[in-house]
Length: 356
Image 1 (tube, rainbow, N blue to C red):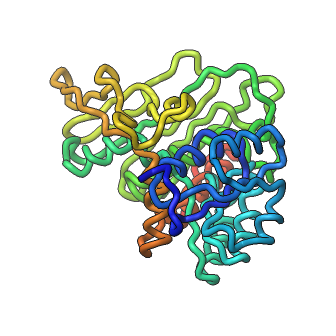
Image 2: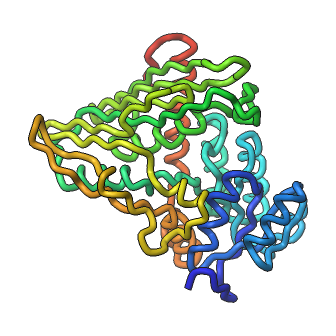
């Protein structure tokens, strides 16, 4: 039962207890049977106390070096730090022989990610990436509709995350250093690109526009990425924090019908409000927000599949205890970073980039 510790639980060492650790990883780990929080790494006294309150019995340490000094205290490491530290901390976990979950983006470039995958493979250590939005309700719904053939042959995919945030928060995500991997392309783009590649296969060509709209911001905050997939499907992905009137969350155009959907997945707000992943009604969307499927004037409202972020950690437990595949293949993260690399080149040169 979730919340009850057992001697054979997978013990997690979580590095970083900021937004991702508090809102996503912590609650999901607590709610998933067979896994528990054992160690939290944070040097912030307030966050340390927050971790102790949220995870009774957890050991809190100030640095990752303290975690590496006692590697037998954990069974898996979760890296939920600023993007610039993802690769170095993941490499340290691998060197310690510890399976590792890395927040997206796994690295700043595809080459860095590819090297990390190779290192994990050479040492026989599990490596996976937290692509939680593979379990968004709208993405699960599109996956089902395509599998059922409801749309016919897919032609075009439009997906967007629009927000209205005129005042930057000033954290590392808004800093422009190459090692920071900040900005929307790395943040939301890692999700939207991953979803597009999962649905329609590898990218053949990439075109992108990366803009800095807000004064004082050093990174992209208004982004468009266009992908031509090898399958022939075209994906248009938009992400912005300067959109005063959000567009449709998702539109999938097929040869026989289309699916249109408004509104973001409900799970993030539920987690912020203290909801328990996997509890009754978790991930369920109100019927008035369900999407529409059909052609011209003949459309039906289709129930949104319940979102299920908890499946990531359920999959991690299965991988570690039963030898199942990791919940996210790290090579998928490499493929997404290849698109991000191409998007950066495209925006700089105002050209279409062809992928090998």
